[in-house]
Every structure is written in structure tokens, then in C-alpha cells.
Image (cartoon, rainbow, N blue to C red; front, side, top):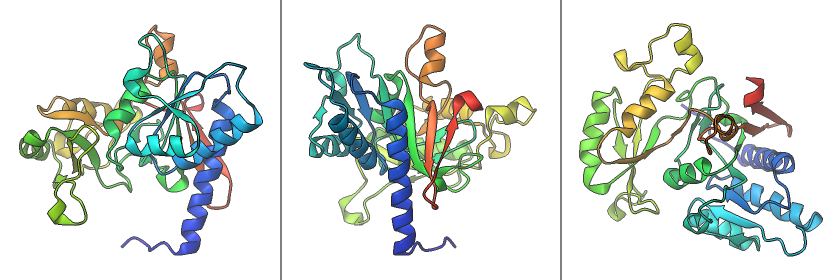
Length: 287
């Protein structure tokens, strides 16, 4: 049984998130940026606070506008409440890139693959991450694991409402023992709906292998319900009715840019706040 967090523990976790957010913003935000992505995770409140303070201390060049791209209704409100300027994803000029995106994660493995979608914003979070030159993740120490699905119980999957039953049926054939439709705590209000009016299915699987595991000969093809991150993400995405999968994997934005593309799902770095008030970082350049 998981330990119950007492108020003092919660205060330490929130302080850890805040310190990680301030360090991430210090390392990756500049006042002359035009477009900045703002995610929907619980740590992003602190990221926006850090950006606001940075801009107060380091005003943008005269006549320059900083625009902040939210990944959902909630993050738009956080941006507005900080006195910053939101811009909808589909209002970003066609040829423009988002210079950096700050977002959280539900779990992060050693290769910086992430599970996201606990807040039901995974589709827009992935849109913004893949339009960004780099995605920087902010989290607390509990989210740092060697492999995905170590402590986080399931993969969030955004699906068309009409397809939810057939998607659940197919997820079971892939080895998910009990995929469930995410509902409000008050059951009579029905399933939780995303900003796209889609549903979320939470699908548990066995702990996921990394690409390094596969390189050493481990089988992540789904035999006996054992998958690697990349293979499972691709397989779920092929299911009819699935809009997006809450696995952020593959290459990051800087890696994609080196081969002539733009945008990537994985973060370039993850900042973890620790219970003792420090911050440790996983950076793709150090993997």
C-alpha cells in the first residue's frame, strides 16, 4: 500500500517542483523569444511564475512581444493570471517555431521517454512539443524512474467517444489487463472529456523496455505482454479511434533539427526537484 503523504511531505514536494521550474527557466528561457509553449502539468504554475519574474528583471527588447502557447484551457488560465499573453496553437504563424516548451510529466525513464496525460491534455501537449525547437520537462523526484510504468500505473490514451469500447477490446489483445475509461469522481457526470471532446482510456501494461534494453537482445515486441516504449506507442496509435498516445518518445527537437526536420516528442532535459531542496537534471547529451 502506498504511503500517505502528510502536509509536510506535500510542502516539500511543491517546493521541489518550484525549484526545478526556476532552474529550467533560468537555463532555457530568454526574454527575446517570440513563442513559448506552456504545458498543463502541476509544475507549470511554477514555470510561469519563474518566467514572469525573469521578464520583470530582464524586460524584452523595445517593441518585442512574448507569446505563450497553452496546451489546454487550464494552462491558458495560468498564463493569463500571470499577466502574460496567450496565443492559441493554431494562431502561431505557419512558418514559426515555438522556441521552447515547458511541461511536466507523470513518469520519466532513463532515456527521457515520458508518460504524459494524467491531466487529460496529452494531444495538445504533443502538438506543442512537436512544434517546439526543444521541450524542457519539469518534475519532482518521484517521477524519475529507470523504466516507464514502474510507479505510474497506466498509459493515458485519447480516443473518439464512439470508439472507446472497441479500443478497450483491442488494448486487451495487446496485453493490457484492465484498460478503463477515465470518469469523473462523481460517476453520474460520466467520462472525463478532453479539450477536443474526446475520452481518455488509462491502459496498464507491464513495465516498458527502453531502446537500450532492445539493443541488448530483450524482446519488446509484445510477446507475453512485454513491450518496448517505441513499439507499443506505434502499435496503440494504429488502433482505429485513437487520437493520441500518452507516450512521448523517439527523438527530441534538437536531434530532429540536426537531420533537417523540426520538433520532437522527447525532452532535451528533465529537471527534477528533490525533497532536500536540490535539483538534479537528466540531459540527453549526457545519456
